[in-house]
Image 1 (cartoon, helix red, strand yellow):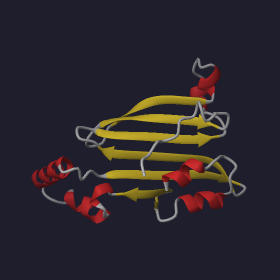
Image 2: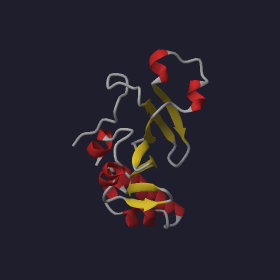
Image 3: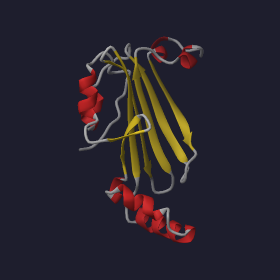
Length: 161
């Protein structure tokens, strides 16, 4: 799925996006894959329905065993049956904190970045970090790439097969 998402470009047909998110659950305007090592979302949700002390204990020992929950959310804006923007948000429970990444591909950077004193390459691709305020808390890296980004200047989310 990540390989298909990485191949998307602004202006591609919406059918390419639909193929890339095939198998994802659609909820609240985004496509989701959740649960990670728990394999099934109901198990991850069931942990937090336990009394708090038990949930903390199960969460702690599951993480120590490497069974960490993760969450991938994908969205797109479409204009005239063509992709106008693609957004990917991924979070995983790390050993000590939540880790995340947010990646957006759009025709140009959002106005909030353009108003900063940026020049050259920074107007095409903008990298920054963000706080994660959920439980557990953590931090992530955000990549905003525009249509003017080049492969050298627009890093792609890296994954292992």
